[in-house]
Length: 552
Length: 84
Image 1 (cartoon, one colour):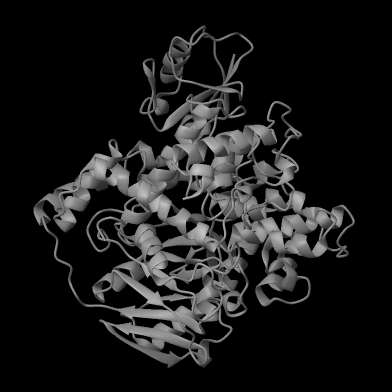
Image 2 (cartoon, each protein chain N blue to C red):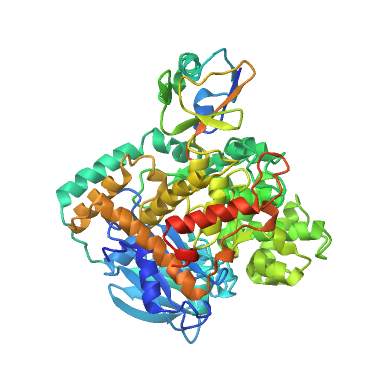
């Protein structure tokens, strides 16, 4: 455990040990792992997190998705460092873990229910001291980007909800009463108090005061806001979707995960309930689909949460379909950029796998394969995972991060956008020097996802490795050093890649769709990424990772 | 020249744009700290808080206070973390 720490790292190791790299990810034998970490349950701010790890039904590659809150603490109190699921229940069931004992209960009464209602009903049945992670209707129907939800938050990317659904498990309910002993409680208390105090400062003000949604105007100003399926980097109606404008019609309140002092969640009122909105949902269901009506985006985001589907893949796949319609290669005339009604209808069809939603529920790559006409050139995905809200041509260190990411195009496993928004590189002209920066952000993300700590702490931690080592020492008693953690991060990244190699990875998949190569961003002619440059960057990445010919 | 605020700097300054005369980045930051007291936690003549970055004309990110500025430049001041 010390070598892989917890969370994503522990999950990656267990996934390799369990096998299944060549298995169909929706087959009974494919493992699904919930991994906690040594820091879970400690007083360290933001440490109440868990990772869900499996082979992705969307990409066929390694997948780890994270979510927050009490479920992680309850799992730890039940005596678990990880929960590994294999097999398939005979009928739709709830997996109940009660302080280390495990049983299945029928889930007929929550079949087809949204994530929130399923949680509510199951807590009413089992008791309020159970913490529950569940899938929505989309997970039951094996939508390949279905999520696993807990307390309104989602382990969102890559389709872990479909994997859980394929095992006939609607929800996992966990209750635990065991107390975890800390090796050095006094030191841990001091570290926790200091970290919490710093987490209130200016380094996290953006998340606390505005939320991630504020990125939308910043990206629009830089011409890097993906719009109309990446056909542009600016959106005329961006101002309508800013947090300031959204709050005019929809009162905004704040919330926090359990054991978090940052409080980044911004909840917008909509009818009698609130909607939690992040930048990624805002761009994917807004500018990417050409929708500039804030209320529609809020309704779309809420419906995705209810159905249990990843907002990025949902928006990306719908935007792709909209462009196919625009180009006349898909006969669904109602599915037009800018139509809020079309967006909401498409989400519904995807969640229920009805009509064209059945095809779109498999993601943009598979849809492109069916539609043909070389639409794969503008399917917005890498390894099958839809690209998040960062225009790769204008953010080229991030473009590399997307291309080489083990789980596909993703902003949580590579923080290379931070490098592009700095004076370290020219964001429109990545060089081989950019590669080292991209690797550093990938290693840092791997470590944060394994500890697990929230990435919004990254500017709070002045010496990330030294402070992380001190936290692990205080909790576990291990004599961990900063260098050991650096090595551990590289080991974790290598484990993910090793899984992909076993699953059939080839160097050719470390690339971007043709749309992004050799053609400048229409609103910014200087933002040009050639195929040759990307190939050079990818080759340098694998050379620095010491993977001859790109292999592990 | 013009300064544009985005994210937290925009919220703290209470405006999205401001016209300022300055010939270096340091001079400009000092002027901003004087004219917008709410920004003083983030901006001084010596530089920017690590949670804030500055960009010249949407092209180059700048941090050296000696960076020369021209009359037709636009300096963008924004929150450093672009992630979400």
